[in-house]
Amino acid sequence: INQNFKYLKNFIRLHQVNEVDGIIADLGVSSHQFDQAERGFSTRFSAPLDMRMNKNQPFTAATVVNSYSEEKLNTVFRLYGELKNSFQITKVIVNKRELAPIQTTGELVEAVEKCFPPHKKNKFLAMLFQALRIEVNDELGALKEMLTQSLEILKVGGRLVVISYHSLEDRLVKNFIKTGNFEGVPV
Image 1 (tube, rainbow, N blue to C red):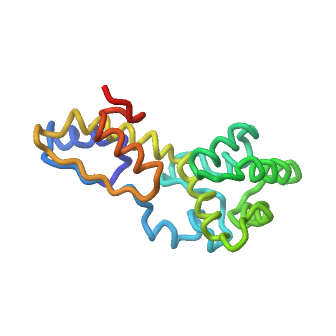
Image 2 (tube, rainbow, N blue to C red):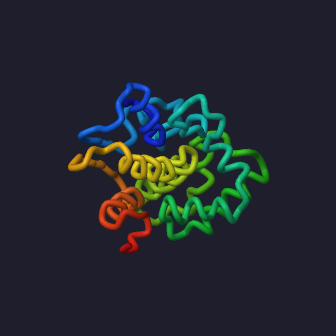
């Protein structure tokens, strides 16, 4: 099913299926999305600050960058980007957007340039863009919904395979499989 994970159960029922033998979830962003400059996923191009998986959704990365409170923006960078200097990044963005809205990926990169750790520009930008992408698309919320729904639709003895690409996803999946909850607390 080529659709947001959070709709897994609905799409299975749409196809008149109640249970499945297996689920394979690939959580990665496709290279096609990174290669389309206008999608705003890549640090290689100056493009609209978009990052939406679903182009029909009105909420974009520009919305996050330009309208979130300083505290909320800091939380996004700290939690989803795991950026140690999230407070500094947020301050720079808030100061920049007071002069003019940040509309493109190039403007965002330029705004946070002085926050790059020495010799780690690409890794830093990947983490920054990851944080915004996760927030825009509620990726962790969708993952949690999919994992919860998998319990309802997997046959007894069925298999759940999840391909994750960063520690935030990986932690949620491992905790859920090990303990049945997202905190990793044994029940």
